[in-house]
Image (cartoon, rainbow, N blue to C red; front, side, top):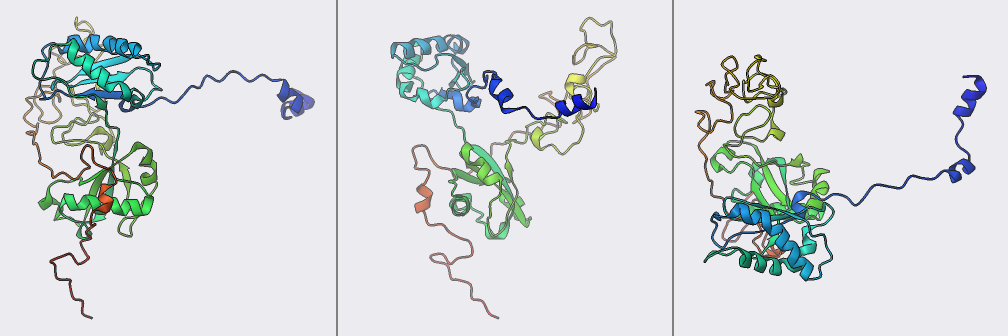
Length: 348
């Protein structure tokens, strides 16, 4: 390429060239909504499995579409349905740009069709409701001596502090560590708050509580029996796993489950091409938790903790309650004088 050609190549296009160019049509459509924003569900009056759950999970989406069509509904009519072991049915709109709230005016008609289309006996389904979409955030490093140990009092206090600082209403608040005795041995603690999805960025960008700017991040639910999908240990979600390398749940070596292979290429179970537990005698399973000969997901593993159902005081807004109701509650600060409590006298 000569000097003149290089000069032409580096020259910006003229206005005529820009005007004559035809922009390609934009293929970008409306943003996709998360599954929870496209989902609504109905629980049974008394939680119990339904004997014909697979049948109505397969057929109710079409029944729902017929009900909406007869109601002259102009919204998308495609749904997928699932039924959980407690008999609750969930419908998800397959159109990823349509929120479930747009179908809310038809919930009574859809519930009536659900209870009339399948045998329910004396245990019908309750009225369909929107799936919860609230997001949980963990606020770390809050000085414990300035916080209420009672979660029912923690909620209005933390909620008011966040409202004052960020004009963001909080739907619930609880301690990340529910064990009060365990918390009392620490100087600081973490609090989990629930907020509307549109308010997440307002808090993760920074919020001042107790004259400090604590770290705020998404909270991921886990219990004693939850297993991390990174190293398959109990008690934490994989998003919060501290390990820098994966652990295979089949053989306990340092690779992912998808990378597990049997070294025997002649065995008929094809473990040399895909992860197959106990593919052959040369590739026995090995648990990374108890070192016995089974996979890390074995339910009878000796290292698996016993499930515990902790009881928590209600520190959240109840159904039908105004989310702003706690604004009218007396916010009790642990350092301010309370009724029936003698204020501390300071001496210098």
